Image 1: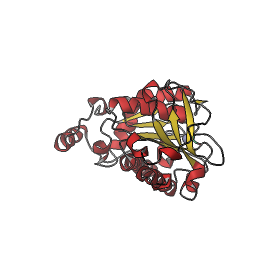
Image 2: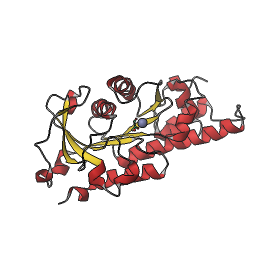
Image 3: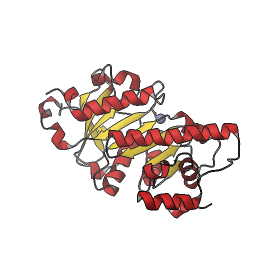
Length: 274
Ligand code: 2HA
Ligand code: ZN
């Protein structure tokens, strides 16, 4: 059994390529991490290198102790993942304290996991807890239209959620809990990781002002589909705002309430303020 034959590795590589093809991963932009099911490693244990150095994560994730993750590499380009996965992605193990990691496969020409590892792992820790272990994918992309909106809309969860819900009837069904917004912060460190993971307690989507988006999902299809849906809604809103500052008609609060009933989702009232 080769690591590249594992289904979750194939799904991860396909998602990197899909994201690149959407135009969300210029240069080394964006990153992807997957919390591996331990049973999926059973046939490849002997291919994992357990002698490597233990490196600091830069934050603490004790609830992820002894878990393996598949991650994109820092400075690596999404467009190259499909051509040479072993140089651009890695399997890492978190130590028993949740403060260090070891590279066990991949990044064969050297390198480190994504510069956003603190945000990814803190999001995984939150999502593992609130989803009862179901969420396994954290995805960060430089989604053009969503970024554009962070220059013109107030950076408030209520505004982004409501405006994007209005852009397509399926939006409130796809992200019923809404969207959190992180104001501009320096990326790559613990502070932005704490801010983002706090929002992930409530939401599956967090927007980083003037930077991009983070989403969480149970699997690659759900995480990619969520990113795609939010970004498409943002594209529609950019077009609407480019045509006119005032919508002539839109979906009303009571119509969202009807939708929630028929589609069996809970839409928080804080987003139905007008
Ligand atoms: O370059 O996207 O946020 C990788 C990134 C950092
Ligand atoms: Zn980024």
